[in-house]
Image (cartoon, rainbow over all chains, first blue to last red; front, side):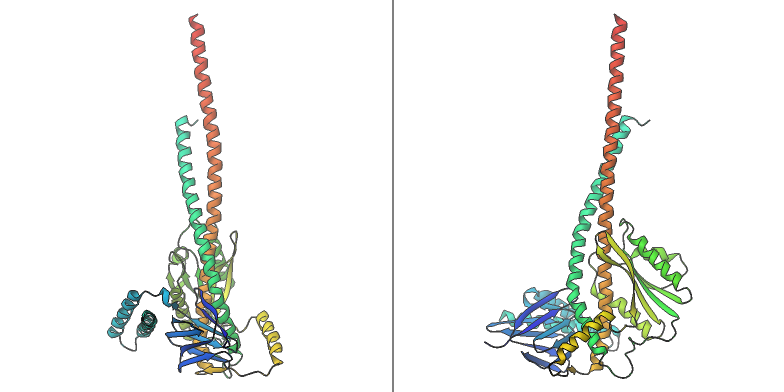
Length: 137
Length: 298
């Protein structure tokens, strides 16, 4: 059996996930990165996207918002604003949110402070849909 | 001397009041439970955040981050005061406002700008001569992280812009259902590790020193991570203060509604006693009259 490490996902509202996993991948600021047990210590910025983990035959995907990841040999902690497991996502709500964010971005000047917020909402909605659609197949 | 009917009416109205206070107590109890769960749920995030900031703060070199540098001269103070939107929660808001007033008295020489969260605080300071930079209701239901983030951002903007030299938050710490204490907490500049945390960190470092220490990689860079992290840290601190304040409010309301219900029950008891006595007196009086009348007819 492959070595495992503890993956923890926490948001300001709750601790979403805390389990031993074999591997995980997450969207970092410098691109997607993967973690196996015994990874060298790393702290990185995360962008909104899809976090995937695997343990044996069991695997899962979680939509995450912006945040941070701290990786040590035995444990990976994900600190994010938002995180939702695939079972919690409502595809229709996510699509509506995506549409709304897109409309907002279109109506705004890219330098406006709201533009960034809209873009973040857009990315998060995109991640949610990605998680849901993959799971449906 | 109130008549029988008056007393009956009185009893009925007190009973109604008791029903309301009882219901409010029950609602507060449920909300308090939720608020306590929220505090517990936010704890892992907040603690992890603190760890991050502590370990990162010691690694940065050169000039400290703008959010961490303290000013030599503190002239302009920002104070965020958390109160509740609604009353009927015992001494909760009074305690908060008193804490704010005493803070204002202590820092009389500085220019203070207030940020108010909660309608009670807004109403109180509306007629007082003090600069209010932003105010908004606390909102019903659970505190919202986005709201905390917005307030925190506003404060950080003023702080980095040089308009404020220090920012404090006054909130009510939830110790237990019957014990809530107003606390003044310094939000900005971010003060590096708390003493006991630092001591702990040293202990941990000694344990680690047995093994060769592997340098941590920071992506994209230490400064980039830190400058993104610090605002988040301020946000989570304010969010936690809001959660504590909300739990305190519900706790205070629960205890005050509990004693209100008790008082109402007591009042109903004494009124019922009075009512029965009066009724008895009336019956006795009538009986005497009938007997007297019968005697007279003999």
